[in-house]
Length: 160
Image 1 (cartoon, helix red, strand yellow):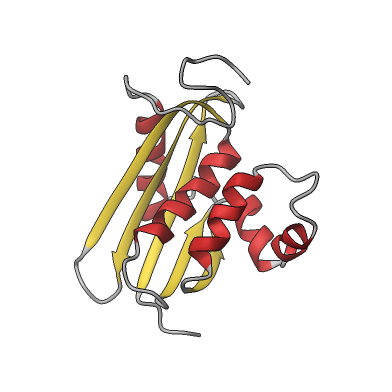
Image 2 (spheres, helix red, strand yellow):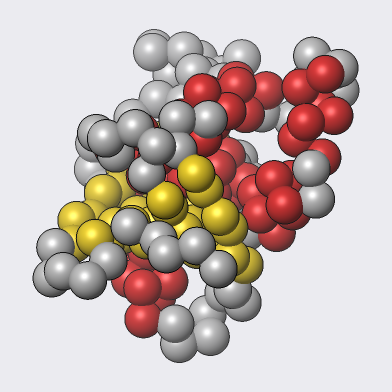
């Protein structure tokens, strides 16, 4: 097992699918007390988009290239797509008939800058960081000011 420099814990939430949604990220620098949290809420998106966006945001926050990263997620959608190499096939086919191609393309750009391992964990199983990410994601989805996921609506709130 590779010695990881950073652990990224992620979760996404949506009330309705699509509906008000958010993501939460907890990043820990291994062997140090350094920890950062990120979250954002959206007026209308899906749980899977938020799960994937959380991973993307975590990877994009890394300033040094070629880091050894462990991403811990309760999303089978995200973890299996990478670990079972489905994503490579999707990319070869130009993401034809795949959901969330905009985010998968963005994910690959961030993912390829580092050495990333994934670990799936069961959600809502008292995993401290996962529970924190869930709380951040839910809180983000309930904020007064929510961002726009342009996949679902334009800036004026008109559904696409």
